[in-house]
Amino acid sequence: MAENQEQHKSQKHLQRFSEALESGRLITIRQMVNELHPAEIGHLLESLPPNERELVWEMVDAEKDGDVLRNVNDDVRAKLIRQMETDELVAAAESLDTDDLADILQDLPDMVIHQVLQSMGEQDRFRLEAVLSFPEDTAGGLMNIDTVTVRPNVTLDVVLRYLRLRGELPEMTDHLFVVNRNDRFLGLLSIADIVTKDPGLVVGQVMVHDFEPIPADMPEKEVAGLFEKRDLITAPVVDDDGRLLGRITIDDVVDVIRDEAEHSIMSMAGLDEEDDIFAPVVVSSRRRGIWLGINLITALIASWVIGLFDATIEQVVALAVLMPIVASMGGIAGSQTLTLVIRGMALGHIGQANARHILTKELAVGALNGLLWAFVVAVVATLWFENYMIGVIIGAAMVINLVAAALAGATIPLLMRKMGIDPALSSSVVLTTVTDVVGFFAFLGLATLVLL
Image (cartoon, rainbow, N blue to C red; front, side, top):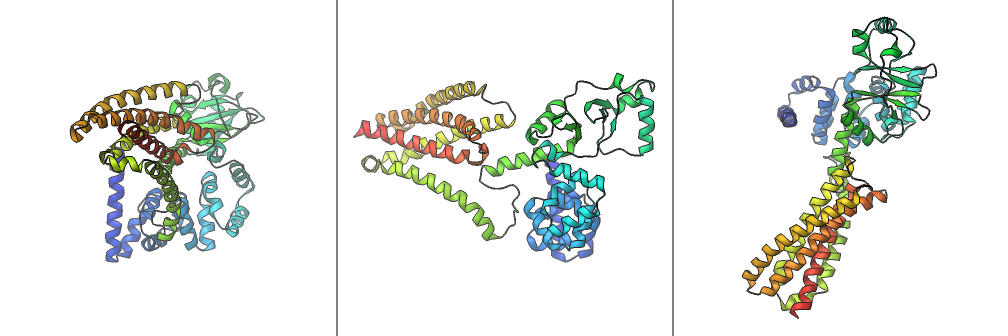
């Protein structure tokens, strides 16, 4: 329900801006744009064609530039950056927090990067270098260096007075991190405990001792899984020696979850979630052409299999009519298994330990569905063409293809991952090839053996 409301809100924004742009009410447009949250402005810019996007981008208040750049995809960000002057880019970059700046820094021109680093204090530069030293898709690349730490041997009263002297806390701070003099992580101290417990108690008596911090090299997908399972708001990030490096907050994890969902959907079509939906025709055609070429190869393989039995098809025309049924049923059954397995792998439910059980179960499902629908199709084909042998042939072919589809749907993603390939990227194309080839070969091969 909330997602539908958000989509409806976005559509209303887009409609209002489109109407205002058509009428040329530039003052109204400027006011409407800058009333939006930076994330909403980013979504709006991604939804506008290039000419309108350039116009709206020029109307965004300068203090929002950095946050808006952080909230658009890589392709759109690159185009917006090309519109900006060097001093505008420097100002936009300097307005961002360290972890947010790390997200876009490498997209900026070298001259801008140099000026930004020169303008930063030594501590901020150290923080930025710490984030950039880790791959973008790890906990270290995701973390924020802005943490509040305390020692275990001070009282809660001392901690409370220290917090009052600070004046403010980093956003989404629900715990302070307890460290020793070497910055090794020891545990968590809840803000609630600071406020409600006896001020004379020592931090070491109150803190959570058994909290397991997140290693800096942990993949961001696993980080998202931890936040989901533990219902975390923030979590500490440590190096190999257990020293505290920074923290990850739930807003960063939400971005990871959203990006992973987009990646899975787009990858199944061979597309990149960072592509601009309004990219030039030639650019979009080139990007999609590779995937279409791969699909053409697989289609030619299926056609070649059909060509092996052209003499059989010429003599029994009914086979040409019924062929798509076998391939289609296998494709749907295989897609169901494929989707289930890819989802299970993404959630960490499927691995080497239980892969055999999943395979056995899916083969059983494929066989049961194959027998059920083979009987239905066999009856229909027999009545349609008044030839019970055609019914028997298509029924047998369907059982073979549905079992093969289950086998392919369960094993292809696992093999892809073992080879270091994203299972969502090309599994569907391989699956389609398998179900088409097996389906056509089984159906036409059986027909050749039985009818000729």
